[in-house]
Length: 458
Image (cartoon, rainbow, N blue to C red; front, side):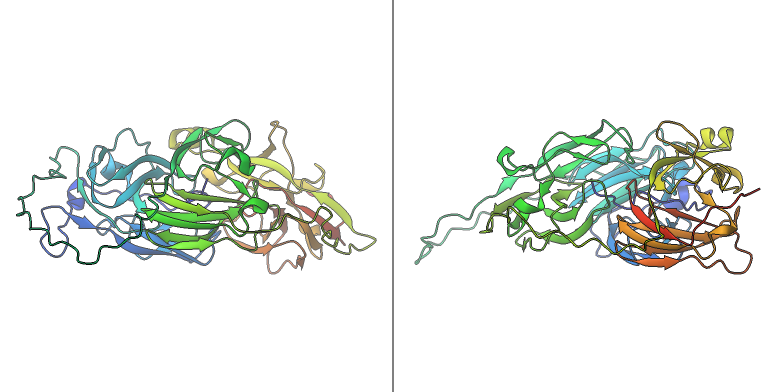
């Protein structure tokens, strides 16, 4: 499933607003009371951890001054996150296009509340305290109305004034070509948690291409099982062309256990030919918010070499120690506060050290204070002491995030590494620790460490 701006560890304080502050403003052009057009919004990295890169963009409902415009280290070009006390009981109606309604805390995955097409309405109910709501479509603009609790939503489909039927003029030179391919319809797909780590909750849903059984497509990713086979292996996808006939869709690629990237966003009439996917990756074609139709044309790709040339193994220093990450959950230490606010554990992976050489907690304040446990519930110790200074890290497999910091603080220096990268930890100023972890993804990695001898910590 796409991440859709759903996972991070930065919390922005909620704002106290009133429903009257959010009376919908009519769009320019006098199209009707309460009618509002979505805006093109940019998410710009201004902090940490920025899991979607330096910048990403999409279309969203923009709320009046006072709504939240920061999340996951990003600052949005307009305020798109509506606090729960204003959203509760409100009715959202999509007038044109389509959009998804999303909700969650500012530091945890957001869940889909509804996918709305033109004429559909949704009334917000039972949002937990501290959550925010957004109305988005990554790919296309839409128009909507927002009616606060107690108001009367406008009629999304008033009876139009009939237009006179024109007299048809015979085409003197009719087109002999047959009608164009109407395309296949996307499938309504459910992602159900059947394993670990399930970062998007017990289940989520969307619209996607369901590949035929003969394609070798798979139905599992990140602990979820999909109701249709939506992940097409690179060997089958390479050379294929996807054309969108109606609606919009995004092509995503990545490994079944790692983050997926957008390789193309297609509107009606556009197409993309898939080339150069790494052999361990899969392809999916999705729209979280609305169905679409498409034409899939297989490419003329020769079968893979039965004995492919192996990828050369990086040269590892003779004195290096090779370690693999441990999948883990960062559990909240402020149990009462976290339970009241609906916080969930952070999910990721890290190098686990001996108990005497590293810390199991981050020693931060309040609900940011966390203890790290593996997926079996056993405490692990990923927070290195000052002995980390000078540790040389060579990435052999997977993506790695190195954190250099002063224990207990809310700021750190992150360094993102890919396979083949090398980084040496150099603590500066009052920094007294480090951690080797995943970049906020429930994935695994392998590293070779040199000059990295654990020492006792207090």
